[in-house]
Amino acid sequence: MKLSRTILILLASSSMAPAQTASGRPPDSTSNTPAQSQPATPSPPALQAELDRLQKFAPDAAQVVTDLHIDRWKTNPVSRSAAQANADAIYRNLTAALPHLVEAARAAPDDVGAEFRVYRSVVALYEVLGALTDASRLSGQRSQYDQLSALLETLKSIRRNLGNDLEELTASAQTQLNQLRGEVKDQQQQLAGAQKAAAEAQQQVLLAEAELAKKNAPKKKTAAKKPAATASSSSANSASSNTSAQTSSAAGTPKQ
Image (cartoon, rainbow, N blue to C red; front, side, top):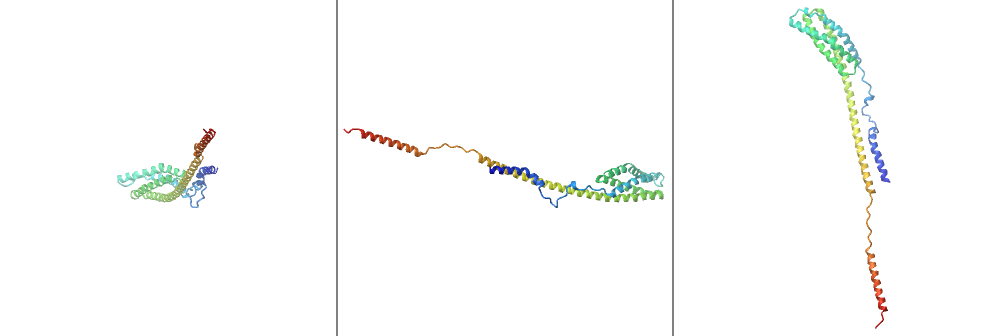
């Protein structure tokens, strides 16, 4: 009866071991906070401000580039052709690529990739606009150079601010990623401990069952042997009876 109670206790402990290991563990003050309790990463206010600046900058800069009339510049055909190619590339970026990138980043303010695509487009635009500004200083009118220089300074400020925002957003995302990795590692360790405890409990159950089966196994019956003294006693009694009979016979026989 005692062994049966032991088996029942072991069975109960084996079924409860994973839950107790995973949920019954005391909270660790150094453990990471679950991802569900973490507040969502706030959208950097500066990011929205720079997107607004870009949205206003694009049509203004496109109009300035259109009004350059590079074909009237006093320079050689090769330089004029190179300047026109840069102006065309800037216009396409300002009217086609950049507006879509700005809208995508505005729709997903926490998306590092969306902001990075805007930043990369701004960097490329700044380089080409800088080359066109230098060309206007040498071959264009003074007013054209002043307009392009003002656009270049505005774009430089936007590029710097976007770079800072992107750095902050990347750092925040990396922090959350590190926390998630720590939580996954802690959960894996808890699961491994629970599996080990369950395996040990199962082994104890199997040992207890084997011991119980061994004790309850039926014992083999052996045939009872008659003691040898009984046979000897019977022989002695038989011999005694024969002797007594012979004596009685001899005593009853008449003498000659």
